Amino acid sequence: MQNKSRDIAKSVSGLDSVSTQKQDPFLTSYPAMVAAALVLTVAFVAALSTNAQSSPDFTVPPGAVYVNPLEYNVVGAEYTQWRNSSSVGGFNPTNTTPPFIQIFDPSFLEVTGSNATIRLIASHPGFAFAHEAPIYVPDLNVVFFSSNGGGTLGYSGWYNNSVVGMINMTEVDMALASTAGDVNVQVQTLNLSDTVQMVNGGTGPYKGNLLFATSGRALLPPSIVVVNPSSPYNTTVLLDNFYGRQFNSLNDIKVLPGTDIMFFTDPAYGWLNSFRPEPMLPSQVYRFDPATGQVRAVADQFVQPNGIAFTSDGATAFVTDTGMNSGKAGVNQTLPATIYQFDVDPVTQSFKNRRVFAYADSGIPDGIQLDMKGNVYSGCGDGIQVWNPDGTLIGKLFLNSTTAEMIFTKSGLVILHEETIHLANIQAQGIDLITY
Ligand SMILES: *[C@@H]1O[C@H](CO)[C@@H](O)[C@H](O)[C@H]1NC(C)=O
Ligand SMILES: *[C@@H]1O[C@H](CO)[C@@H](O)[C@H](O)[C@H]1NC(C)=O
Ligand SMILES: *[C@@H]1O[C@H](CO)[C@@H](O)[C@H](O)[C@H]1NC(C)=O
Ligand SMILES: *[C@@H]1O[C@H](CO)[C@@H](O)[C@H](O)[C@H]1NC(C)=O
Ligand SMILES: *[C@@H]1O[C@H](CO)[C@@H](O)[C@H](O)[C@H]1NC(C)=O
Ligand SMILES: *[C@@H]1O[C@H](CO)[C@@H](O)[C@H](O)[C@H]1NC(C)=O
Ligand SMILES: *[C@@H]1O[C@H](CO)[C@@H](O)[C@H](O)[C@H]1NC(C)=O
Ligand SMILES: *[C@@H]1O[C@H](CO)[C@@H](O)[C@H](O)[C@H]1NC(C)=O
Image (cartoon, rainbow, N blue to C red; front, top):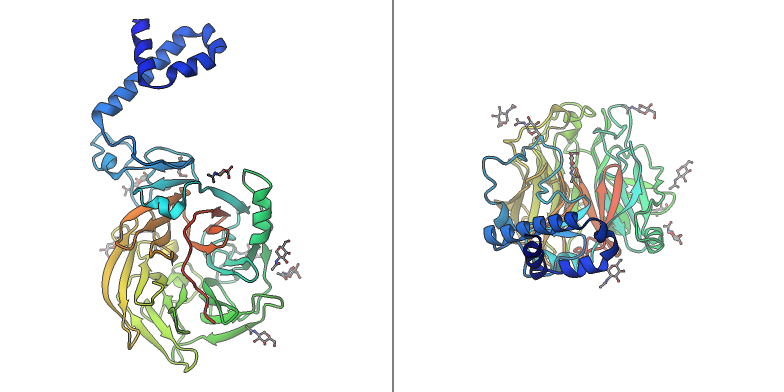
């Protein structure tokens, strides 16, 4: 019996060489070793006979996990991990410790490269300092971002503004080079003008400046502002009303590539998170031409339009609808957690031919960015989810909790994760967001 099981173990894999290397400790527990080998053998044979897909025909990078959808299409009635929109954490069938890279399709390796890691670069437990509005300024090698406005651990609301911070990626690179583990680089807080209230969205640099969408606070109006990325961080407000009516609470903004025209979303989260009055406009998407001052709606029929992005040719727009999440009013899982795709009319720049691009399996798809190959990244309830241009989920940068936004830098993808910031040194490059 013992000899037989040992022979099977030998023939299956390198178990024999393992046992010779660790000869001394195993001498004293030979029965335990045999039992372990038997268990491994049975598990291995069972895996082979029940599922031919279990070993991928590509090399899974260190620290990454391949989740072959075919292995999870049927989980059976005895499954104990059923999820819903209130479930905390994400779909993690291998129960791997986050953060890690989850591969759903081998093509995700073209995004990550063969040796990517996800490392912590800044941390402030108890304060959601890293929420949204990431802007990378290549000349300074700095990322700017805002703290959480009105939500959990944001320490902002009707009476308190949120804050804009910055992290120096040169310092991040130096710190990461000094260790194989995590680092905690100092974040600096900007001292901005009082005209900047509850920054929530950002892009740029726009003609050398940071371009922010602010949600406003109490009776102070939401606005589009440009901010000098260097001291004294002076600010110019470009827009704070729609023909004399206040916006609801502007959320996110992008510039149509090849133009200097701004597009922004205006959901009701200021009201839903108790820091703005009741909305008096539909939750919709606007176009603003700062040269002529013309502002107009270009898309509606959303529950809560949130993140916005364009393909690099400017022909296609993406808008996330996070209607499933009503902020402090809770979650309704029959409402959208959906990325919609549109054609941008080449003449009018209105959004047309709306269709579903993707529905996120965890939380809501919040901020959205594209890489040079047209892959679409969105911050969801379990980390960054990545779809190819056809809308196929190819992988995740899995953090196991809400991640609102991210931005490409020359060091990799900077991931805003509320109380922490992570850096994934993936090989994909973001599309150019600079407006000259
Ligand atoms: C959703 O999932 C959570 C955690 O798994 C569970 O506690 C809760 O009862 C579920 N809610 C519904 C409506 O099924
Ligand atoms: C993911 O997060 C949930 C909720 O915090 C936690 O219960 C679970 O253990 C986490 N999973 C892993 C693998 O860390
Ligand atoms: C992979 O990353 C590790 C740790 O950063 C490094 O030591 C190793 O040289 C890298 N390997 C390749 C093939 O880049
Ligand atoms: C507003 O800020 C003050 C002073 O920093 C702080 O004591 C208070 O807790 C904050 N309010 C909220 C709702 O976070
Ligand atoms: C970032 O850090 C580097 C290294 O300390 C420093 O030389 C540089 O001036 C810093 N940049 C900014 C914008 O503070
Ligand atoms: C903001 O003001 C504080 C207090 O005056 C100062 O310590 C800090 O350096 C300023 N931040 C920046 C980015 O200049
Ligand atoms: C900041 O002030 C400088 C000097 O007055 C001015 O040239 C620049 O346009 C201002 N920038 C912004 C964003 O207001
Ligand atoms: C969830 O949303 C649907 C669609 O708007 C609505 O019919 C339903 O009443 C909502 N459920 C709850 C519990 O609010």
